[in-house]
Length: 381
Image 1 (cartoon, helix red, strand yellow):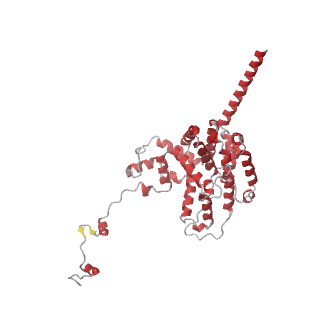
Image 2: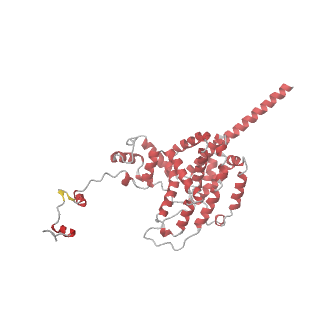
Image 3: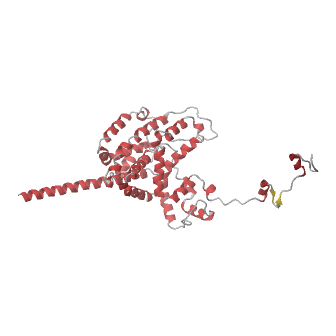
């Protein structure tokens, strides 16, 4: 009888171990399936993005809920359970705030703005509250031994970002990927000052200008919580040597994604927007742009906005490759003709005169030139 009891206990332990391992494997694989994720995060269309004029954002009625969430996930073990079971609604909330309050630059010929809207304040307050919860939700990552859960979290966030990409970018990536397999790239080693002919062949085959113009998916915005959540999670994983493989696996997953350049574009355009405002290209939009820049790029909120955007560009750049990333910067902002594709300027025959010379030799002095030195042409004054 004792042997039977021991056998039954061992069989129960085996079943319990199998069920727990199966549950952990399920939570790792998808945390969410692609169909469930699409139900929460399919926000490629503008109508699914939160409105800054809505009373919930305008009067900050979300603030008590976010504060309670921070208190709950601050309890040990709660944040891991939250990621395993509630990741879908959380990513859906981030997706609703992705791209809110887009900025449109007033043309040079237009007059200065007459009425400055205060809607940007609702957008910044919402993103500050949401991004402030990242530290509580991801604090367990560097100390955990559940590498599968961290890898599944990174993979799910990447899938949520890909779901937002327009279909034309995915189709464009497929067409150019087929083209890359058949055309020559013009040499593997491309320096900053390459042969213009080789660079032109390489650029025309892989990064044609019409393709990059199509990557602009909308007006620039300062609010990209999905990108910043991915950058924050990867940053926490990179702080642990045990999770180096998870970071490398995530970068490898990003490397094979369609429309990777489109993912790089969004944080890159936010950084460009900040640079343009800093040098005064948005003055006709009023003082509100300067206030947004201060919240985006100055302490204490810069660690929630600009620093995470830089980290997102860095991690996505690892997947893209250094060479491709540099060419993406150059082609995306139409600097190829200035930096890479322009042939060396040949000196003009008349250029010697600017150095005090004629094309045939040294410049002859004018008879009246001596008077400027206190002399006449015939002798001493």
